[in-house]
Length: 406
Image 1 (cartoon, rainbow, N blue to C red):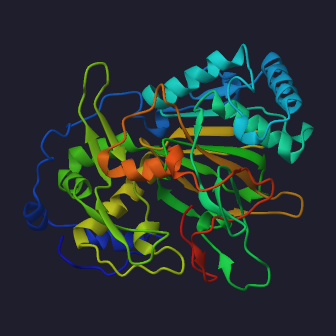
Image 2 (spheres, helix red, strand yellow; image 1 turned 135 degrees about the vertical axis):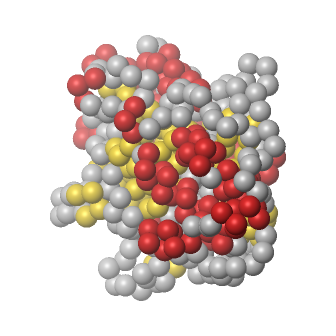
């Protein structure tokens, strides 16, 4: 597309957005119809709005997207922990066989079904974090998650400077008080994280501790965002479905081209789907690697529209200690409010990127190499690492005051 705005800011300004909205003549130059084959509307539970969702504790886990663990289920989890500890195996050996949950497993399989063909997210509430050590909580988290998605994605390619497959990430404020060079991706600060997608099929979080204030997890249906664009701005659907310049986080100067929006038509028993994969970080810069590629005005407007529509339709989750959140990263868009830590209340979450080989969606061709680097054994760099202590990812070193997303 034509050159235009040189760099996109990470944080958005609504006034700037409205001042950039195209007029009718500009839209006609792009095309006012949807791309060939794209649906006018997606009809599915996955196309929800905030008004359709209730996370009221009084529901008692009676919805596909809220599971409140009860006494017998907690006893199963405790027994599975003890079973795994007796095996004296490394954490990479955690799977449904080594972390057996005879009754809960069927419920967790239904969680996977809900992620892939239902609402696209589930909140599991009630793990008694305070009863266990940090390592035991990690075992519980990885063990429970293996019943939902047994394949775990690599989140980093090195550990303490050595090649490794880092399978679990700590999400907390990691800035140093001395104010020197920091890892300041927004996920590792107390700042707002704007709407985006991660990599991988399923993104999961486990809350070890809460902040004093703020930090709500914001979740929106990418399908609802698509429906709004298809109805009101099909020109932006066309823009999102064209190739965009995506800079590499690991290799400065390397640009790959792919769409931000993919359509998969129905086939056999598989329904039609749209997939959104985007991050403003790709266009505002990977830390010390500032991006010099240009986006057209149409691309900037489309990128902003994704955020503001997600903001319009989102549901806010006040994640509590012991909560596990699972989202379909191919159909959901997520963000996070800024937060404030206190002397005895510091926000600290664990994160996994998962895949369920039984229920998982087909990966678009343009995303396949990235998915392979996450999940395929042939890309293994070294031992699997599950860090007990919080360490930032090796990508995204930035100067203080610059923040991007996860």
